Length: 154
Ligand SMILES: CC(C)(COP(=O)(O)OP(=O)(O)OC[C@H]1O[C@@H](n2cnc3c(N)ncnc32)[C@H](O)[C@@H]1OP(=O)(O)O)[C@@H](O)C(=O)NCCC(=O)NCCS
Image (cartoon, rainbow, N blue to C red; front, side, top):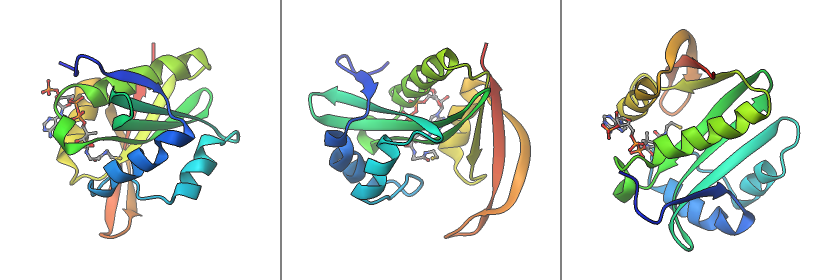
């Protein structure tokens, strides 16, 4: 059950420091600079969808990012603050991403995940993503293959 006042909405520049603080404590979340986040927010080629989850005004509890190359899109990142995990926030973020990219003509959503990231793999399994391949040595620090997963959007 998601927190009662949860809002999923487009990410804005004023979310960036909250997003960075949240991501800093998560090993599998992106640890980008403020400037990199600003660049992503302005991305037009490829177009990106960046959503924030806000539990109360100004309290960022999660985010998700997808890049669009219709008819495909890639889910580049999804993360939820540790104290808000297992409340359906990632599920809600990905469903909101899917609604938006479907409207943009996307029919296939792809993503990469570390085989060792059990929580993310469980989340993607729950959402119906299926394995379609493996990218050897895709990740660094530590080096690990990536599992490539896909979900068709209907
Ligand atoms: C992966 C992550 C985004 C999941 O976020 P979340 O908000 O806790 O996920 P949800 O509550 O929406 O989970 C939905 C379902 O996914 C599965 N799931 C999610 N986390 C799980 C876990 N730790 N263990 C087992 N199943 C899990 C469950 O089926 C869950 O449903 P349930 O709680 O009713 O059993 C979160 O653990 C996280 O931020 N991890 C660090 C960043 C990361 O690894 N991101 C992915 C790679 S970029």
